[in-house]
Image 1 (tube, rainbow, N blue to C red):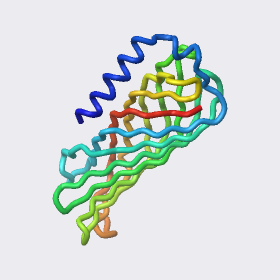
Image 2 (image 1 turned 180 degrees about the vertical axis):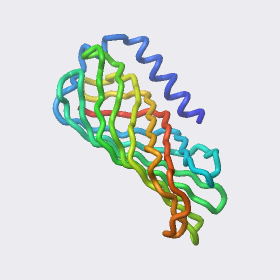
Image 3 (image 1 turned 60 degrees about the horizontal axis):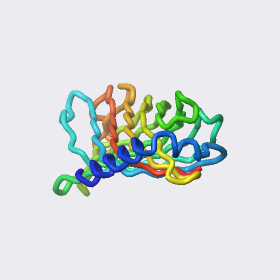
Image 4 (image 1 turned 90 degrees about the vertical axis):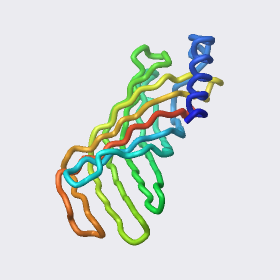
Amino acid sequence: MKPLAFAFLCTSLIASASGSAFAQGSSRQGLWWGVGFSYGWAHVACDICRSGRGGGMSVTGDIGGTVSPSLLMAGELNGWLTGAGEVDEYMGTVGAVAYWYPRGGGPFYLKGGMSYVAYRNDDGENALTSSGFGPQVGAGYQVFVTSRMAIQPYFNLIVTLPLGNLTFNGDRQAEGISLGLLQLGLSATWH
């Protein structure tokens, strides 16, 4: 996690040193896309589940359009993976999100949307699976390094409503499952 902390520090230093200089030459318009890498923590909440989940590598991808300089809409994919011995855990999401920049052309944004989340815990012979829908929230600080490319530290939180089922090799084992994914990362966006 030290490289991620270093990336956040570099972004913060660039942002504080440049202030609005990058934002003045920036261009938030038209179609855009982005990719991010993060450290993530997943959680599966149910009566028979372990309470804790370790962290793992996570990736985010967005493609969208600009509604106005203060509002962007996108489709988003997130993936998370961790392995503990011979067991691999995966979580993936697909959703629709909106990015709102409260100060119009400013660098700070809030994010909200809805996502479908799928979870799988697999040891090669047996698999636990679950899925569900739920809200997504996040925030970030976008720093333009060219007129069309920006980098941003960000966090995302995706939590499903407790309506899912947990299955073991296809057989239902528990109901009322809630899934969660927290990401803390750094992304790049091209406008």
